[in-house]
Image 1 (cartoon, rainbow, N blue to C red):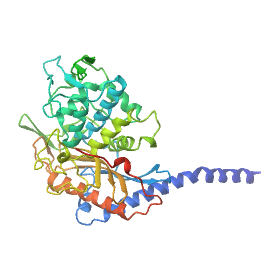
Image 2: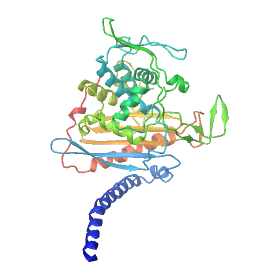
Image 3: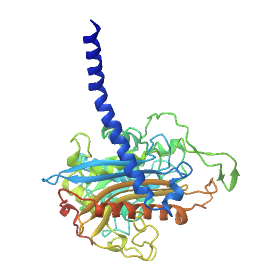
Image 4: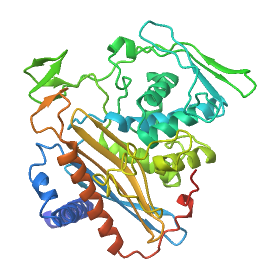
Length: 418
């Protein structure tokens, strides 16, 4: 009587446990590969990897395999990835702001090259009526996007934040499935939470000076989940030491995996559902590809001093410490970095047009040995940049030797620069 029931139960357990065992095996294999890659360097990386929690290291690496039609398939490998482990994203949040600003222009029918005049409505706000670094001498969304990616310009980012407003930013991030991201303040400006909830009035004009669109001050009442993000053992406030961890609970948040995903959405929109990706035009994508990968020396407007803005200025993977190195033309890094409060982050797609190599790599590391914040004594040069440079080199070497059934057609990323 019970024999049939037991057979049915055993068969059911086998059927239901097989996918679970397969998934666990895949996770283990992924973890093992990542550990093998990281352990390949026994001098620099292992020193920090062995103390991963102190340095708050998170790494996400994606292999890209193409089919015979050049369609991409992703395989993710991670190390210490944890959406609940807070890191300050700093300038890396400028990437989604740039993408969303292009999207909003498209939705409103505004050319991204239209003149963008920023007004003020409150005492804490400032105006922008000109931009001497642009070819026309006037500000525009396109020029702000360019400065964001070429040199990580803070003012350019803040102006796009003011054009977008918090409600639009978070509505669109949630639509893209990025549920942990919170962009709730401008960068490098000491404003209150309330002041950051208000945006500047913005107007757009065509070449003849005719008004295209006028946006009043936007004020959000949006609420955010309670967070308890405390970093360090002390910090300076108004040049006075406060001997307790610094509270980051009201600062921007963007999990590494979500930064990684939005980069993938931009590089390969065809790999995601249409309702999930940014709603951009073909020209918008071309503009992003150019500015994400362009080097400061390849720009005429603005014209950057190469001694200050060297090739690796915002290219941390592979070249982070190499201030005198000229990066080869065939190796292009489409990325956005961030550095502040001791956190160093890079989110990148690397494409070697000559050797047919491509991969995604994102990582963050905390470089603050004394655990004191706001003292401008961080260890970017001695810890962060060497770490990210070496990490990029090891992954790149891994990809050079990795066999692929179909080599990628990278002509999409063979761009003309200024």
